[in-house]
Length: 376
Image 1 (cartoon, rainbow, N blue to C red):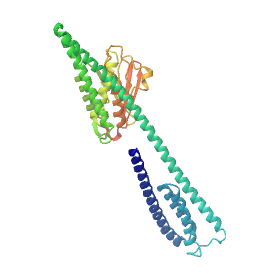
Image 2: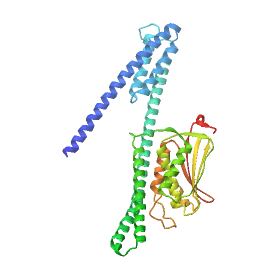
Image 3: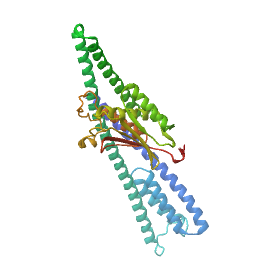
Image 4: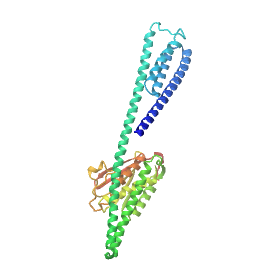
């Protein structure tokens, strides 16, 4: 109870302190703007002898005050002060109030109404904009929570199955070591090695997505040669999967792309590895790169069964995939593709999944600068 009272008192003091700060800010800003408006009005009046210009200056001052202060009061108060200044300082007899001039009451009321309406509308629009921004922030937070939940679900799926495999294989090895042949022992150890290697790759992906989503570590882009990035990604994948067959098609042009090369290589590896394990085909993986509308588009195609239509819209959201028909059920697509989308979005690009006549096709595009594309 005491803790609740303390929190309530603290919040109340914070609100009071913020209210005092807003009041001081509103007062100082109103005084400063009205002072500047008066100085400008004096200059315009003595140069042009035109009261209309003076009235417009004060109306603009009211708009400025309403825009950069909190609440309706500063703008309305400023509109009354502006009308009084026009009457007292800039209307004959000067330095005296005179509301008896022919037509002036209408002018006086008109200026008050116009200034008040402008002030009220400006304050209302500002509040509406604030409400819209808060709603957008809430929607973004909700989307982040959904992505986080999907990611956790994908992690639990993609980590549980290889861990279960490692535990099961180790148990089999320990229970039957004396009866196993050398070949069987090697096969079991190889399975443990593959699952452990897959887990290491998963941890690297998780570290990557954590680094990208931390504001303290933004993406650092440098201009990288397209051919070198593709070559490095393919070499790294072949070290991980020696038997993979990849056909590469890239432009003959000398193309430099602003990117974090390590992250884009990881995207290419994830997509090609996904095509290898989930394509359910012995045919080569196709990696095609083209330049379209000042963007470098990378297409990774398998020649297999394709992606189920009901999975296309959610494939990058971290949802675990259905095991493929080849029996390799220990490797899920979810988290790897989630990492891919995170990396490409951080680069200002787009990534899409689809099917073509021979299988699945995953495409991502990165913006490039026209002047760094040269003929070879």
